[in-house]
Length: 593
Ligand code: GTP
Image (cartoon, rainbow, N blue to C red; front, side, top):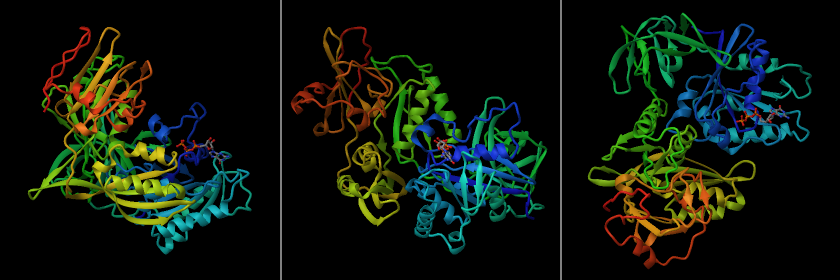
């Protein structure tokens, strides 16, 4: 059965190449917007952090109608992959729009997603946007795209991609540069002509793979995915096949399809439809919603294991500003548990301490995005330095290894290789890529990546792009850094210099955290081994918004001062935290491990 009335596509675009403008244009022209709806409501990537970092974290769905056909548009995550999300999203669609700026050309940031799309044999359509620009160079850009496709292993059919020239700003599209155009119609037509309609068995038992989870305080968890087989009805009893082989029963309470930027309740949906379902309270990503009589699970995309963990704890440092809206253990726990609903490669575990949680994820970026999101929502908490998750496999201690891909302008190749060498990376491949960039590929222990991203951005003046995916566990090779011993904190209150040492391992407590006020004269340091003590004095009176607490990044914000190792050791001489003065400063005694 072929759903001729549907096309499912994903958009791959670099930040600022015009994705939002294009989707807005398609929405307007497809007549989805009615007079009283806000046209400038830009929903494709509404998350602030996504906007700032230029990566889309959650994929969102939009649907436009063109004549008789419904086009479901799913947004793809940007360059970072947090545990198979890209692949899961791409599995819902039959074609991709690669949107490229007519001047800038294809960007290395999109390689990762594009490669996945090509591997999945999706049909690409290349949309050259901003052809109205006076510096547009569409033909060269197309050559670059062709080169990129070749390099990423596109097959002959994919290399024969259709091209649409577009000005999203002006709402026009054309298939030949010389054509005249007054609308986006040629783009709609190209999608309908070149992207295969979904097809499969409509009379067979239902199968729908849950790709994304959304949640809503009124209806609870909402499962989003594409119907791979059969049909689904409101109020239907279904089977839910979990990833471990168990099957349980559930009932569809509300069934939605997408229309414009909104969800629309429907009575029934069929093979090929992208739907949202409420009513199954404990539904998870990767599960299959299936027929009660014939429950059959669909293969799901493996979710990469977490390799890095950090302790999140209630902010009980004497510097805590208590300015946040959510400061208690309960707040922290509820928020972290909620995050687990949608952030599939995240793990949250209790710790010995009632007000600290161990949060594990796919790398520092993965966790730091969560930390930033929570801070913006008004959560005040502190986090420990990131730690690598070691594993014992057959009696051997193993550590996680990442496959790191770096794209940098040629002039920075030297510094990158040198820095990574000292972080125990092993170069696997080196090639010249597109736009004057070189590509370097490494195998690197996950511990070698800790703190590297900020160094990398500095070293490459913000022009480098790095991505890593989990490679596997390998026996740990010597020199594993000792567990972080503690945190040295000293500060001047005007009355006296006070200092103390917290046991970072036990509590994961660091005094310096994002948002934690840091006062003049405060000395902070993190020591994993005595030789590593790194001490800085904060020169500014009140520094807020320090990033990624406890990571090298936060510490390097302030110029280092000359403190001898002996002086540092004096601070941490005792086994116990030094009781501090003045008395208004709360500090608990902690024993070092
Ligand atoms: P983010 O939302 O930042 O992720 O980027 P995006 O890819 O969604 O791009 P967006 O639609 O926000 O457009 C980025 C900038 O390019 C905006 O200033 C747009 O006005 C501009 N722009 C988009 N399409 C066109 C176009 O066809 N021509 C010109 N000249 N500018 C355009």
